[in-house]
Length: 464
Image (cartoon, rainbow, N blue to C red; front, top):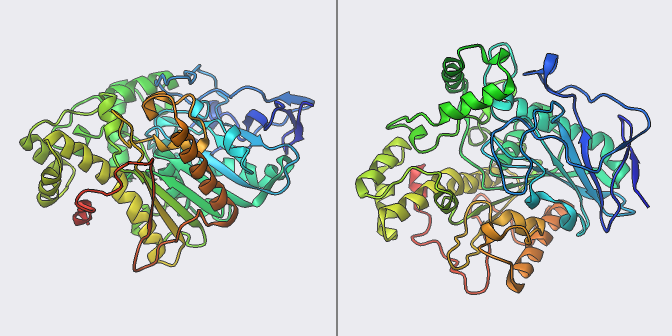
């Protein structure tokens, strides 16, 4: 029987299956026309029954991701999706925020299908939000962090509507990876988000936050490239200009190696502070994870500046404000400057920041569990994003991230990782001890035979 649900905006019809699926549900008004660069407004209601059986349009971007749609130019990009077991009643809710450097991605990526995860006993929600300049560009007279405000609007929609799908609006977990995890970390600090979720799962949290001045300087570069005010530029022209600006070399600075232009802006209003500079909402429990070889993915995709000599490694460390002693120690632990560079880059951006967030939360009285993903395969590292298909149970479409078709060990690891997410969303306990102010227990996700140690311990700790 085709499932139907009544939401605050109107009645919707989804797809029947082992898990009921509702796709492309508007949670806010289209953020264009008079709504452009404004906080998200409520969605328009409708009469009759709305078919919600296909993903909604994705936000403006120029990425072409395998298996995912490209930007069509459609305006109604603020939609979400719900996967719910039949006859669900007051199940815990997991709301997924996708990654993509705050610039690309969508909920339509095959990795994020919520069917398998929902079948474990969760209501799974995934939400699109504004990206790039539309979501995170700084414009005088307009609110910063519009992409984060979109995510808060999605959480409000969940609070108001999820009971109709069988979910418990009082037991919501926000989860995200990469930019999605960075977003979730910011939500812990945003007054508008307080009370909308009980727990947060943060995988590979990037150390990437912008001051207002830094964000304004990027806007000035994009304005010069456009030759007009970004507030009046067509969305497609704005995407093209931002892509061009991100490719401009910045010798000796972080942007020489990390050309990401957008991210959360610490404006003192929508986002009061960066996550490590103040106390989080310690009533929210955290589950934090990073992979052990994050940046090997970007090397495999050939999106990184090459670093092949010791001199290049030192120049990289200086540009990233990493002490020479740390870079030198990484060099002693690796077989080449390139390997030292990839290890140091991944730890500097993701591993160190993720670990410190968990420790920071625990030191201030919050509950935080820490994990590391170390699953390897011949020719494939434990790199950025390889944990996501395992946590969602979507291994069949993840050959590149996983290094080929999954085997029985992968399937077993995936079941354990999904169970940890489910149990954490249910009770706050993923199956291993939380950190304390004195120590940080770490759970490792790996296959039989994987090397579990981190050579040399955690040398990035000298970067404090």
